[in-house]
Length: 112
Length: 113
Image (cartoon, rainbow over all chains, first blue to last red):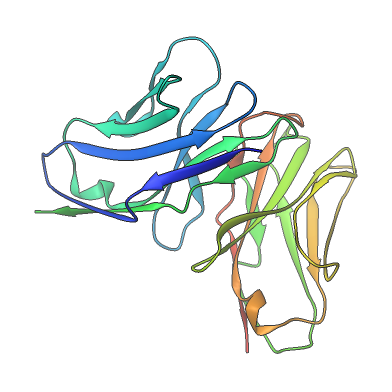
C-alpha cells in the first residue's frame, strides 16, 4: 500500500523567507511523486514531479523538491517566498495503476 | 493546447436528485480520472477511464458512476444525492493509463441542499 503524510496543515512565512513544506511517503514500489498547488476556487496545478533519475527536481515558480529514498521524503522548497505563493499545496504518490494518493495538504500563508 | 475543461463549474441540487458532470481532457489524452475533494476527507480517487473502459474504482458507493466516450470525454453521475456529496469534483487527464502525469481541470463545485 502507498500513502503520503504532509507534516503541518498550515505553514506561515514572511515574504522573502524560505519556504519548506514537508512530505513523507510510504511505497512498496519505487515511487513516482508529485507536488500540486491549489489556489482558491481553482483546480490543482502541477508544480513538479519525480519519476526516476535526478533526485533534485525543479518545478515552476521557483519551487524545487528533493527525493530522499533513505528518509522516504520529498520536501518542497523555495528560497524566497512571494505573496503570490499563498495557496494550498498537495504532495501525492501515484500507484502502478495510475491512482493518485494525496496527502492532506498544507496551507501556505505569506506575511508581508 | 487547451487544458482540461469541466462543466458546469457550479451546481446546486437537492437531496434525492441526480447530477451529471462533464469533463473534456487535454487533446490527445486518453485517460480520465475523477477525484472528490472535501474539507473532511481531502482528495479521494473516484475512478479512472481509459479507452472507454473503467480501469480503476475508488471506495465509493454504487451511486457514483461514470463513463467515457470515444473522443475521450468523460461524464460522472451521482444518483440519489446526499448532503455529504457536497464537494469539489475534479477531473484529471493523462496521455495514457498507468503512472502518467495527471493534469487537472478547474473542478465542479456541487452543493447538495
